[in-house]
Length: 282
Image 1 (cartoon, one colour):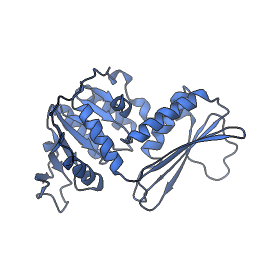
Image 2 (cartoon, rainbow, N blue to C red):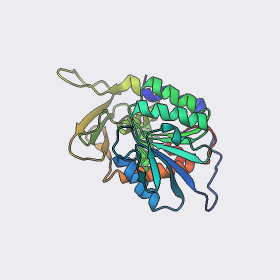
Image 3 (cartoon, one colour):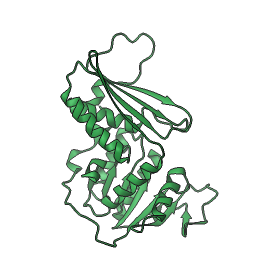
Image 4 (cartoon, rainbow, N blue to C red):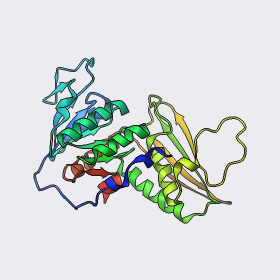
């Protein structure tokens, strides 16, 4: 079973078309505030009048804890993230930390945007349960471009036959700890959805040694790690004497910060439920 398949489709609500009122501020609670993604989000919020940072946290042994960052106290107490209605936790931390933040969001009615990757089946089930009580946007990649790429991959896979082989290659910086990336798996799910199959049944990401012939219908994954690459993903459809390559390259992690804030504005006015970046763009 693919990890994403554990998410309960009944928790995906019908979007009511809610929008921000003019001049209404989205309050952001930001765990991991001193990290690279945290700093990018803080810098972007500083440029946008429609957002404000309301809470910042870091792990207890971080040297900046106890100081004031951008006029907001940097705390080691995760409970400060619970802003309540109108507030949004934007989380790009680690799975076990994200799970703790999900409970805070659920108990306080704080919306949440989750860009953390590498969640297990059980962790995603906890996320689904929490979405019954508060709006959650969960996505492996908050980039608008990647979201559109996944939509195109789904369409192309649905129109090409099983005799077209699908391979996904992803490249990330040498500090990334999970593989294949959450984005690569999301693209794989999009391709599988286009073919009306379960990715868990056709995924091939462990080729090594004498593997035998490629099984028709499989969706293959390959991984590269090096340097400071923000993220590159290519989905290739191999036919007879022709192929289609669909590629997204992230020049900076800033694109994820921009998408995350767009998702936060969306989540702040939604009813409880589980949403994706497709919903945000819609």
